[in-house]
Amino acid sequence: MTNPTNAAPPPSAPEPRVNDPARRVVLGLQHSIAMFGATVLVPILVGLSPSVALFGAGLATLLFHLLTGGRVPIFLGSSFAFIAPTALVVKEMGPAAAGGGLIAAGAMYLLFSGLVKVFGTDRLLRVFPPVVTGPVIIVIGLGLSSVAVNQAKTNWWLALATLAAAVIASLYGRGLFRMIPILIGVVTGYLVSLLTGQIDPKALADVAAAPLLGLPDFHAPALDWRAVAVIAPVAVVTFIEHVGDVIVNGRVVGQNFLQKPGLSRTLFADGVANMSSAVLGGPAATTYAENTGVLALTRVYDPRVLQIGAVFAMAFGCSPKLAALLRSLPQGVLGGVSILLFGMIASVGIRTLAEARIDFAHSRNLIIVSLILVLGLGGAAFPISVAGTSLELHGMALAALVGILANLILPAQHQEVQGVPEGEDVAA
Image 1 (cartoon, rainbow, N blue to C red):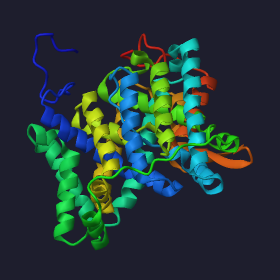
Image 2 (tube, helix red, strand yellow):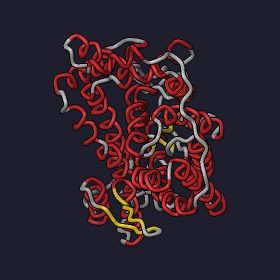
Image 3 (cartoon, one colour):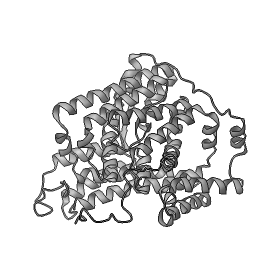
Image 4 (tube, rainbow, N blue to C red):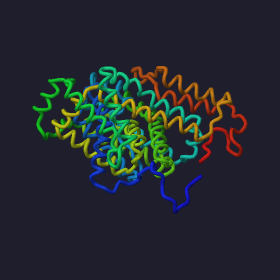
């Protein structure tokens, strides 16, 4: 039951707009910290510049917000789906060729956008009912859980101290402190690390020696059709991830971004944003689940906060000292906050199933959810050969594809809820 229009919102109601500029800056910094670890890790693994990746992620996020009318509070960062093919191309053909391949992948997004524009979003939504999207969202969150645990187990006491600080700030904080639990957790964890000597002395020396300002090592892309053949097809996988990320973000915020600004528009924006990062010599930049976890935790959904986070990311890319400071964060600190963030994403998936009143007494629903969870979390991989290169469809993308096919193939049963067709959202 909704509140009367003249009733005051509950204390836990989300704050759609943050009018205090100082608050927006602090909250934006929190988002830039949340995306930093994964965004820097990808270029390190594939052989590209971390500074360019940070600058490219910030630029990509700003372009995405510009092209979607500033409606979707989402962050774009280095995509893990492109790691294997990008690393192969960088090794065999060089970073410039990888840039050309990533630009082609961005162009694939523009093609998908056109197809959605022609055929309509509603047809897509029919293959993404809550019985599919709910467990896929769970896979997105829990699929990242091993990353959080691997970081935390480097120093469990430090991770727990960081986690405890974030939880206490979220539950008992007042005003601004309640909205920045991740930042408070990171600062607390870093201070504990300093006091207990947990930070690598070399990392501290790098912070002291790094210059305050300096441009990233940008480089131009080059067109190599071999690189295009290896990298561009991965966009088919990340297209599914994009839909999942936009659905997750909308579920957290309480809006349907597939309808407004529309999937066609978010795909177009994601494609242009990805190409902007690749043009500079950075990795693919696509929609990020990490920052959606921050939204779920803080309940602050103002897109301007994400835009400020993007500016911070660009500043980190142009400041070797700031980047070195963040790189000095111990893995235990990152693990402590990641446990909370990734768990929040999985919880949104559970909420999606609950709100849709999915009846698990039906074997059809059990089968669909079971397939998605086991294949998405169990490490299953489906090999694909492209231009003589072996790639794998796995994780969230594999789970989503299997869930979609199962939902289309398995025969529907009687209605789960009076007046509501099976698998459809009650609130739709």
